[in-house]
Image (tube, rainbow, N blue to C red; front, side):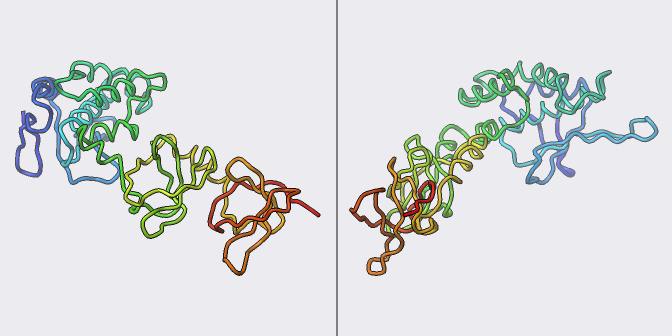
Length: 283
């Protein structure tokens, strides 16, 4: 069984893991499916195209991006075959990724969920996607990342040097969420979002970007902070677990003067440090 890419037939055995080739060939022959490789699309990995007129089927075709690795190609192929099976069944009017489609996709995937076809990390993500509490049988960000990269590539791809990040980026370092505040010559000023600590980290340090499902939660957490220089003079703010009052800029040092409430001791702090704001103090 070969798949067409323009006019050059490509054997399916070269597109999926070798131990899954016979299974895929059998499916394609059994259902007489047409598969076409297409130029990579930014937001779509594969599509099932069905054309009808007056209730009569004119044509149908599965299109898959030509740049997918074998593990991802196999999963996308079975994903689209599941759409074909649903479209040609009595349940064809069910939701595109509804319960019936999910069940069909799971049945197609079960014969290939083996260490011969996927790594242990990929199988973990696939099983979670297919049989987890919130199963959708679609492609989550975590599953896509696992399928796109080998274990070695995934470790490298999941990390990036701080110096390559934009200011304001949220990242994970030593298991804790941070936000990049300022880049200096060799180090970066970063806010530890859970404790409100402002720490200096080497620009060359490799950090991880949060999973998509965690990003919104961390972004909302970051909104509780603001640069010290934007806190109105006289207002309270929280920093490193303690409460301070902003006394305004110190013209000599260029820093902000701060003190603890009801204290005469005055400290200075970088204006760009992020703090949690509190209520207004009136003398």
